[in-house]
Amino acid sequence: MKSMNEFTKRTLSGAVYVACVVGSILWSPIVFAGMFGIICLLAVDEFHRLVGSSRMLRTGAFLATLALWSFLQWFILLPPVGADTWEWSVCFVIAYALILVIWLLDEIWNHSGRPIANWGNLISSQMMIAIPLCTMSLLLHLDKWLLLALFVLIWVNDSGAYCVGSLCAKRRGGNHKMAPHVSPNKSWEGLFGGVLFTFVAALILAHYGWFDVITTPRIKWIVVFLFAFLTSAFGTMGDLMESLLKRSVGVKDSGVFLPGHGGVLDRFDSILLASPILTAFSWLCYFLLPLL
Image (cartoon, rainbow, N blue to C red; front, side, top):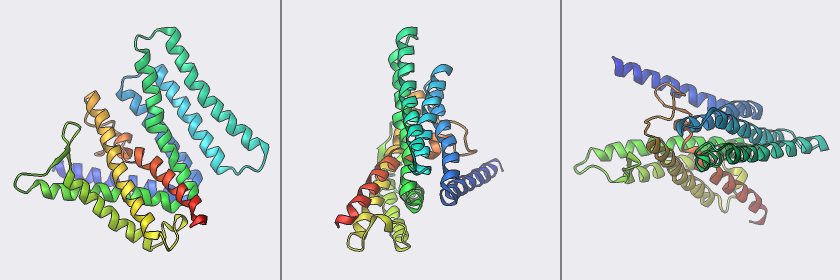
């Protein structure tokens, strides 16, 4: 009965999570900016709780992330119709840089006992979490179906890897572990299964025009193939990166964001590397389209 209750709780919370992600992407950029802004702030704070940062350092990371997210949303949601838009954008960038510099000076002057660790954790939270999550806004700005495709393919990749990996684990000799010291349940069989499932899902999405903004008929399937491969590869690497973080601090879950699913980082770990890579890839394809 207890396991059934846990399964029900996990299923319901997972359904709410998917509905919120899909709904925010399709509904409005403003709704997306609000919801994922909160998620970005929670993810950064969760990282600093994991590594044992002080309340002061967590405050600095919160303010820096807020300034960065605000800059991107201001720049994307408001078209540059006048000088005021650009002035506010510049103010957010200056604020972001000043916050990082101020916390560096604080480590220099106050002798916390672990200045390199504190400064490194602050920069790591920005490079590993805040900036990658912010790139989702740039992908949404290009086309909402591309961002939704990224999430759908990430979910398909995770599900495919789990199914294939679980099946192969039952055979004699089990499966071949990918990185047992970091994530004991991940296998090479699961990786290839996830890639295969992702390719099939990408072909289906391409049939319905989800990638049309970055493709032409002549190169459509090459672009779709690369999009799927990059999503699967870097989604898996992001998952392993977050597992390495948890392994380093000795915890099973990064937090308790969703019942049965762990913390914010547990839910969005695959996005951390996939989002910036796929955003850069998509914008590159978009700019190259007129030349093809």
